[in-house]
Length: 70
Image 1 (cartoon, rainbow, N blue to C red):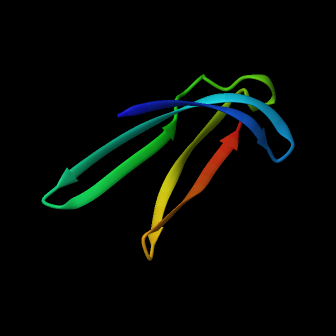
Image 2 (tube, helix red, strand yellow):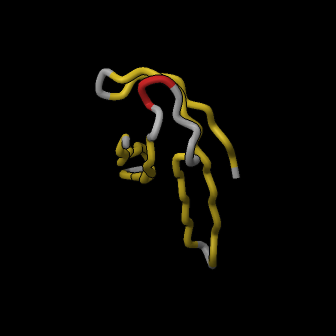
């Protein structure tokens, strides 16, 4: 488990929000959940909700961030 504060700009909207990382391994199978902590968005990112997917290809890691701003 980890908590990460993000400060940045998404599609021209500036602000902060918090991500919660939670991971488990069951019989060698990894599972990772990264979600926006509700009500943590500030500035123009107030109302943000979403999640991230970890993608591992040929040993390289990247993320897809799916979010909405209410």
